[in-house]
Amino acid sequence: MDTPILHALTEAVAAGRAYTRAEFWARVEAVGAPLVEPDPSDPGQRLVTFVWRDDPEVPADDVLALLHTFTDRDRHAGDLTPHLMRRLPGTDVWALTHRLPADLRASYQFFVGTGPREQILRTDRIAWLGVLDGAVPDPYNHAPTLAARDGRNPSSVLALPDAPVQPWVRRRPGVPRGSRLDTTVDGRRVSVLVPAGIPREPYRVAVLLDGEVWGSVLDIGDTLDNLHAEGRIPPTVALLVDTMGRNRRIADLTCGEAFVDWLADVLLPWAGRQYGVDADPARTVIVGQSAGGLTAAFAALRRPDRFGNVLSQSGSFWWPDPDESNDGPEWLTRRFAAAERLPIRFHLEVGLLEWMLVAENRRLRDVLLERGYPLTYTEFDGGHDYACWRGGLAVGLVGLLSASAGG
Image 1: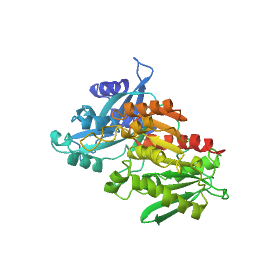
Image 2: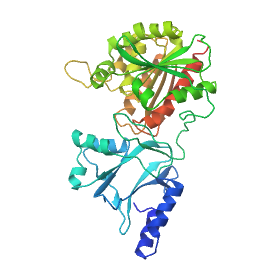
Image 3: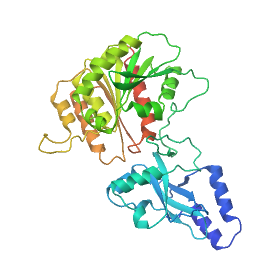
């Protein structure tokens, strides 16, 4: 796709204009990347051009623009060629243009490859992990990066003009900082976030699954501090529960009964003794993403005596894969359909790009509405992406905790 910006650059180079490349990069430096232009055929879309500047000391053989969920979908389909950038003749500019919804938010990185193209385009798991390990953020994107775990580089974030605003995710000067304690409860790592300067009354409580991401990587404390400072949520203690490794995460976050009972019978009573959190399930929110979103909903179904509010983001409600040991997929949705209505409120959200999750989240929504559950439901233009989830988490907490203020 040859956008007006790229067309102008190509024409100037072909005409032999001096300083053309330097002028192009000066423009990119000034306005920031990626380059966003109107789509003349559709006002609801934008032409988004990702650019990478070649290193003359180590020139690339190929460059991949890794746009979260878009690239993952094609990798699952076994074809990464739609994400190969092209080098504009006579320049040091690698470019790739996508036509994207004007309300999209997505994280992205670049992978600079040397060697045969067939190696760079491999989609097997080992090769893909190597790509993710070597991918880097966009040096021309002026927005703050999205931190990564497992020693990987951070990602840049694309937020197109109509993307939902995320007013609470960044630390603000002058906002009182709450305290954080990293501890161990009955053998499991937990981080406790307590709001600043607010007397114990008792506190509401939010249990966040995959807590090591929200604590050490993304620092959800900044969001909570901002929400408390604005009075958007009542005083709330957050319990960030570590998954304790991949194998344990798989066991716990696929509707693990023992794990949910541990949260209800060990963690929450401990938090009550140590921090004075309210034992009322109507004032307790459990939060999860992906498999964590599935298990957050399951926790309320299994233990409504402790969990009265569910914040599920991109919940894996397809679970389980059907085999001879189970009665088929969407197990939890069928359980809610068969059970009596419980005193639970829900906030569900899913990305429109999550091709494996949208239909399943819609079916759970429909079942919950038919059963009469209080529910808010959002579909955002984005994918399975913390760049989206961190904003949606704040919105969900505001809705559920505010509703619980008189509960």
